Amino acid sequence: MTEFDINNIGLKVGLEIHQQLDTKKKLFCDCTPIDDDEFSRKFSRRLRAAKSELGKIDPAALFESTKSKTIIYYANPKSSCLVEEDEEPPHALDTDAKNLALLISSSLESKIFSEIHVMRKTVIDGSNTTGFQRTMLVAQGGHIEVDGKKVGVQSICLEEDAGKLIKDEENHRFFSLDRLGVPLIEIALDPVEGDPKFVKDIALTLGRLLRVTKRVMRGIGSIRQDVNISIEGGGIIEVKGVQQLDQLEKIIEFEAKRQHGLKLIADRINQTKFTEINQKEDIFDITEVMKECNSKIIKKSIEKQERIFGIRIKKLKGIFGFEPYSDIRLGKEIGQLVRFFGIGGVFHSDELPNYGIENVDIKRVTEKLNIDDDAFLIIAGEKISVGFAIDSIINRIKLAKNGPPAETRAATQNGDTIFLRPRPGASRMYPETDIPTVKVSDKELAEARSNIPKSWEESIRELKEKYQINNQLAEQIFDSEYFGIFEKICSKKQNSPNFVVSILCSTITNLERSGLDSSLLNDEQITNTFELLEQEKINKESIQIIFEQIMSKKANNVLQALENASITQLTEDELDKILDSIIQNNVDKIKQEQMRALSGLMGLAMKEVRGKASGKIINQKLKEKIQGFLN
Ligand SMILES: [Zn+2]
Image (cartoon, rainbow, N blue to C red; front, side, top):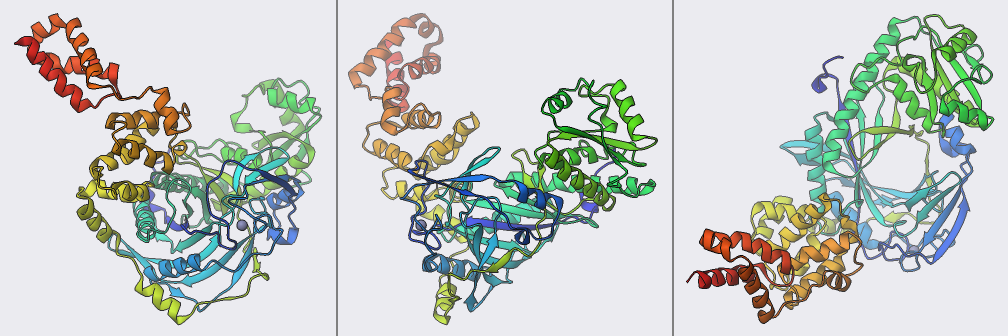
C-alpha cells in the first residue's frame, strides 16, 4: 500500500452552509416553524419525475424516473397550512426572513441585488409537496476572514427548507411537513486549497458569524454543510448532509484518500489494454450456469425468478481488488453503485471464491464468458433494475480511467461517505410564476448595514462580563444549542451562570455520551427544572436525575421524572435519622479512620438520599456527626 500525503494531491474544498433562520413565520405562509411529532393530517401524492427535469439523461436518473413511489405526508395544522399542501398559492415573502438575509449578506460584505427573483429548483425525492424548492439569490461576492485569511463568498441564497424524511420503504416514502417552508440561508464559499482543519475553522467561523445575529436556529439539523471536494484531475464530488464539525474534518480526509486512491486505480487501468465494455458482446445471461451455486444471494434470486448476468471486463484482471489505500477499491465503488438500483448482490472476480460462490461456479462462469486475463462481475436482481445497473456499471468503469468521477455522496456518522447519486445537471432551475419579483430598497439596505451585529469575539467578551464566567464557558455556551435558554434562565439572577452552563453543556453532553438522547429533552422541560430549583422544591443534584429520566424515555415530563425518582426533599429530621443510622452502622470504621471516614460515609449517604437533600448539607451534617461521635 502507498503512503498517503494529503498535501500533495491538489485537494480543493468548497463549503456550502444551510442554516435555518429563527423567524416567527415560514418563508411563504403564516405558519409557525415548530417541531412536531403529532400529526392529525395525512395525505398522499404520487411521485412523478419528468425526464426534462432530470437534466442530463444518465442511467441513474432514468431509473429514478421509472420508480413509482407514493409519498405520504404528515401534517399538523399548527405548523402547516394549505400552502405546504400545495392547495393554495404561496403568500408574499416573509419580510423578517428577507431582512435577516440582507443583514447576513451585509455582514459578509456581499453585494446585494436590488431585485430578488424567486426561482423553483426541481426536487425529485418527494421532500417537497410541489416537486420543487423555492430559492432566491440575494447577494454575491464578499468574504469571511478565517485564521487571518480571506475566504471568498460565492453566493447567498434564501430558500425554503424541505419536508423531514420519516421513513423510506419499497413503494412508499414518508415526510412530515413541519419543517417544510422554514426559511434557510444558503451560503456558498469559494473553494480553498485543502487543509481539513482550515475548512473546519471556516465552518466554525461562519457558524459563529450567523449565531451572533441571535436569529438563527440552533441544535442538530438546524445547520447543515454540503462540501464540494476534488483533487487535481478529478471530478467534483459533492458530499451532502454534514451536521457536525468534527465529522467535517474526517470526511474531507476520507474523500481525499478515496479520490486519490481512485486516481491510482486509474493509472493502473491505463497501463492495461482495456478499452471499454461492449454492451452486446460482454454481457451474458448466466442464470442457467449459476443454477447449482450455493451462494445465498444467488439462490434467492433464482427462487424469485430473477436473472443473473455475467459482465466480462477485458484485460482488467486484478483491478477490482486492487487496494491502493486501505478499503479503497473499484470493487467497493461498484458495490455501492448497484445498491442505488436496489441490488444487493454484485460479485467481482478478484474477490472470488467467496460468499458461497465456489471454484466450480467460477469455472463454469469463466468458460461461459470465455475469460482470459479478464475480470468479470456477477450481478443478480430484478430484470429492469439489473438492466439499469449494468448500464450504470459500464458507464462507471469507463469513467474509472479518468479517476474519481463527479457524483453526489452522503456523509456517514463515522466520517466516511457513500454513493448517493450521479451529479444532477445544471438545468434544474426555472422561474416561480406565483410570486412577483421582490425589490430591495435603499432604506432596507441601509438598515441592514447599520444593524450588523458585533463580532463573535466581542460577543464572547460581553458574555463573560455580563455573567462573570470564564472564556471557555462563554465560548461553550455561545456555540451550544442552549444559548437562548441559558440567557432566559440566568435573567432571573437566582441561578449561578457557572452552574447553569455546566448543566447545559457538561451534564447533558455526559448523559448523551452514556447513550441517552438529548433530543427528548426540550426547552420547556429545562426551564421547568430550573424553576423548581429556584423555588427550592428540588436541589442541584436532582437536575441530573430529572434529565436522565427524560433523556432515557422513562419520563415524559418533569413531574413524572420527579415521581419516578421519588425526588422529594427530606425534612431535616428525616435526614438526621438516615445519617445517624449510617454512623451507627459504621462505628468501627470511624474509630479506625477518624475524620478520614468522612468520604466513605458521604458515598454511602449519597447513595441513599441522592436528589432528596443537597450534597453540601449532607457533607456538613456528616462532618458534625463524626466529630460529635469522636468527641
Ligand atoms: Zn403554512
